[in-house]
Length: 317
Image 1 (cartoon, helix red, strand yellow):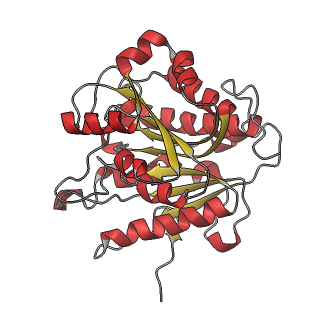
Image 2: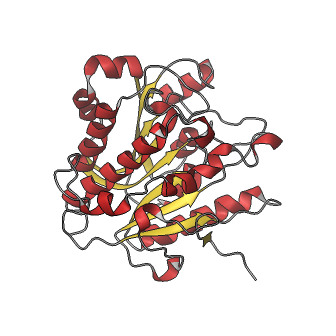
C-alpha cells in the first residue's frame, strides 16, 4: 500500500488553532490550508532529523487559547481573525517521510502542495529547514510569472552543498531556475552566511533585488514595499533567522539586525494588499533554542496576520 501524502500532526492530533484536520487532499474544500513539511534534504548524516523537524507540531501546540485567537477582537487586524466571514481553514497535517528515501519526502510534499493549490486554497507551509520551499515552489508551476519575496539573513543561492542541490542553502537558486518565477526580492540579508562571492554575483546577474538589513532599516518598510513589483502574484518565503533574534531566538544562526515585529507585520499586510499572495512558508525554527516561547508567540502572530490580511483583502469573497 502506498504511503499517504500527509498524516495527522504529532502523537496528539493538535491542529493549527484547532481548525479541522483534513487529509483527503483530492476532495479538499478550503480557502486556507496549513501544511507541515518537517524534513529537508540533509547535507550530512546528523541533519537527517534535526530539531527544526519538530517545529510544525510545536507551533501547532503553542496556543492554548485558540478560541480567543479565533473569536476575540484582534488589534493587529482590526477585528476577529476571519472578520466574521465563513472562511474555511483546514490543517492538512504533515507530509509523510521515509527514512530510507529522503527524496520521497519532497515528492510527496510537491504532490500535496499541487493538490492544495489546485483546490484554490491559499497555502501556508510550516517547516522544517529552508529546503522545504523547493517542492512547494515547484508545485506553483503556472504560465504567469510569480514574484518571489524572501526574508532571510542569508542569500540561499548555493548551487550545491556536499553534492546536494535541494538543501537549505539553495532554495532561491532553485527558484531562479523555474520558468514561473520572475522578479526576486530578498530582504534582511546581513552578517556572515553561506554565500561566497560567486553566489552573490549569480544573484545579481539574475537581477535579484537584494535589500540588506542595513538598507532596510535606513529606508523603512514602506520603501521596501515600493521596490516590490505591483500586482502579483507573489510567493512569500520566511526564514526565521531573517527576523531579529530578540523576537525569534529559536534559530540555528542568530544574527543581530533582522526585521523587528512592526516591520514584519507591515511587510505582510503591505504585500497582501499589493496583489494575490499564493502562499507563504515559515521555516528554520529550532524549538529547543527558544526562550520563554517568544519565537512561537511571534510565529503564530505572523501567520495569523497573514491569514487576517488575506481575508480583509477579499481573497475569499
